[in-house]
Image (cartoon, rainbow, N blue to C red; front, side, top):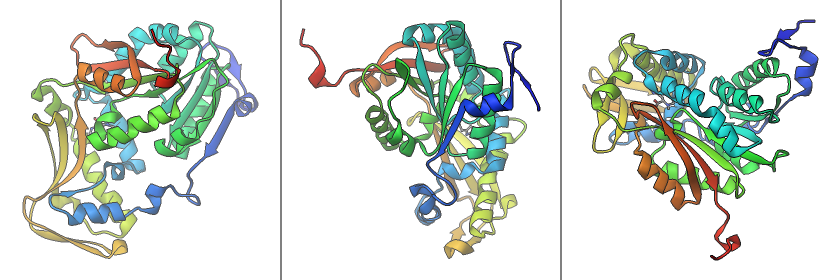
Amino acid sequence: MSISKTASGKSSSPSTIDKRLQIEHLISPTQPSETELNAGSDAISGLTQTPKSLPARYFYDDRGSQLFEQICELPEYYPTRTEAAILHQYAGEIARLTGPCEIVELGSGSSTKTRILLDAYNELGYPLRYLPIDVSAGILESSARDLLAEYPLLQIYGLVSTYELALQRLTPTQLPSRMISFLGSSLGNFSPQECDVFFSQITGAMDSGEYFLLGVDLQKSKDVLEVAYNDSQGVTAAFNLNMLHHLNRRFEGNFDTAQFEHLAFYNESQHQIEMHLRSMRSQSVQLRALDLTVEFEAGETILTEISRKFDLNTMQQELKSRGIVPLQTWTDPNHWFGLLLCQMQPPESTKIAD
Ligand code: AVI
């Protein structure tokens, strides 16, 4: 039998790990999400409109997820590192402010930043209960097993799910409170309308007094931003172009990736990085499974992602107006990234008049 060493030097056998792990599949190949059932129709509508666009979710096949992990390590891509440094510095304060609580993570991926929070709750002797939510069953299960081997007192209840479904299905926690974390500035990839819907889902899922931990990338100089999305090793370009490989595989397409180039720039008036794929010549592309032929002019672009950069004060106001009250915010010395710990306020009707 193989025994895993834990961070504390104790050992966790596979059987104790199994007892502390529960994973529920709200989506699966046989039970696809609404988004999967509509797969392709969003690509058709994006590629037939002017200007052309594609949903950013097509970045994340296996190769795309690997490339994103590489992006997070790039010297030019400051957000991951900066957010991790803020978490390292303030995780203890976060744990003291929330008290014992279940940590729910939206888009948990490899759960790297979760360890910083778990360490802080562990140090205070709080019970450790983690609820990762991710659409990838493989990543969710392997990171959950790694975490359980490292933290012998941790209980994990994972959901293979989209955010939307998982937020509808959250059941009351066994711990005194709960904290939903949404890190990495993934919020920046939502349009203002999508943000609106997301915040309504959050408020619908949370009880009053529960916590919301949000990481957001902040507005800063165009130079710093444009370099972060145009790295010198070309990893971001490969990540962007990989979307075309993904579409080729999924929809029997014939995109020639050598005939498209990566383009990323900061749109200052919208406060957002825009990533595009630019057609280097006039060309025609078929996606046979979608029965679609797309014509490109030389220089024509497809918008593949927006990455919005926020103002911390405006974000605080916005959250507060939705009843998600910021308790404390933290940034790094450059004010490049912001972390907000918020608490759900009681519904109007239950507030005691003062
Ligand atoms: C996942 N998301 C927060 C990243 C971002 O910075 O908007 C995705 C990314 N795109 C290019 N580089 C990183």
